[in-house]
Length: 297
Image 1 (tube, one colour):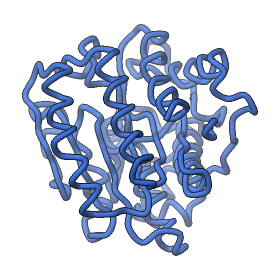
Image 2: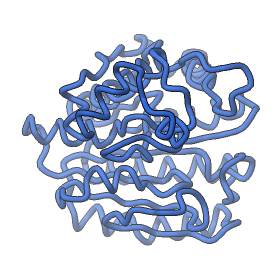
Image 3: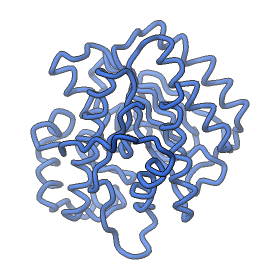
């Protein structure tokens, strides 16, 4: 089985009634255990420290988060209270994605049961995202000379504005975002390749776009590593979605992306991205699909 990363800090306490479905992280871990996808247990990552985070973010912003002293305006943009627990969660998530990426380089496939915080820009967080874990990990691996080129395949329903911002001057760290065009964020940051989809797109049409665009990109760019943001918010029942994929469509999407990487012999690191709603069991089950794809590829 491909290694899977989990840290207890992935699930931080929020005020009662908060709309962010924080419980899905712990529930996802429970589902993966129950399905036998972690027979040797989860890999526990080392949380990211200030130096690592400052590779992708303004050091002053990093210091504010780590001190849990973020200005109210930035907290409002993030949509989460930046408490000590939420700050610890963001550090664990960034460290978890870097850990999973290193495991992918060693084993071919790996994933983290958090990550995909793609709205966090260099100067500050937004959209439930505090630190941009994929940007942190990609930049760190390149500084270490573990990789020269990485491809970020972002299939969350929202455009990956933060990743585009953090990696804007990094042509060898290529960002692909396939998202719902009329969804958040309003002020999109252009990435290397942005594909905006119309509202209401279903399984067949979505997969047609993915199958037409991703294989030639992988073949032409030839990355050393793929980061796959497998957000499940394109699902038809997602509270913040606007697309109409089914469970079967998400499963086919994940298998296609992972299968391409395996065929091309390119290591792939999966992160879970977004997924929103009050039915935490259903959300966690959708997030489990990408780990099933890793296990069966």
